[in-house]
Length: 400
Image (cartoon, one colour):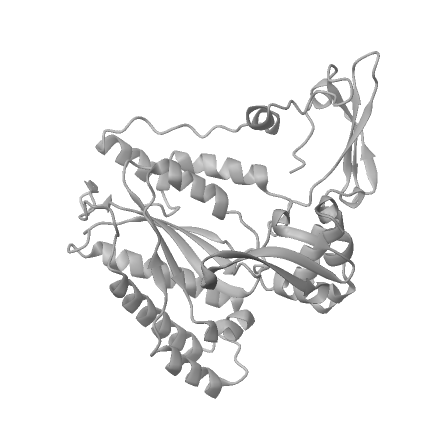
């Protein structure tokens, strides 16, 4: 099957596969959402062109809106990124990644909520502790942490991407500039690794003693913890961002990412699926991988986050409690222009700005305006007809 039919093929052969019934109820719900995304099973909007000589009827199927869907979330991501613009300061920003030894994978898989939280806590603790040291900064950083659980080949590889401000807020509330004027790195890598590993292992042993982990073989886990205690844990700093614009571009690419995008998938059949991936161990060479549908589903399911688990978290001066008030005061003290207002931009306007396409216009005659005439919501199994003028003038919904 060619790339043209990738989306429907994914839904028909993969996300609707009988083997999905073997997974837990939440994962089953996710796969069900993905399998009916943009189909009549999710409901639809009916629009009619108001041009007298056209009268065309358009159907727009509803998206599933699931955060694990490779087809959804584009406009949500853009809206989220725009909200972050007002939080950026006139400082340098660094990209630091915290990884875990693969020997812990089985323990993490059986305790995702607890172990993912520990990964967040350990990375934030490491950065916060170093930033408090006057030798390195002596202030409170702003940290945005993003959880990813996959490698390019869909293997299970939990790690945290941190976007970290170069400067921070001092005890007196004033801004403290970073001490390293060359902007090459924020903290020494060796010290990052040492503190991170020590805190993580100490906290992990504490969780075990408190009985907060589901463990099948404690002796085996004890041996694993002992062995990884001698290993080097990878904490690496990528090249510093060139400025706020690079930060925003990064946020746009990574924050709402899912395990795999449809653009990487090259072929789908009722038996197997092929996709592109970059082999980081071999100079980022672009390669092709073919998996059975069952194996693809198994790997994909590993990256379904626990229900309600928050994958983007904020620390330091970006923590949610009184964040807006704190940032407003900081902008004044730094004599920066007033923070940008957070404005809601309708989907119609986004489409016009980005693609030059007005989704309220009839695609057939390109003259008339599409008027909403009915909405079908399958859960209620009913048809909702617009009851007033304002509802009839709505633009087509987000079908991203």
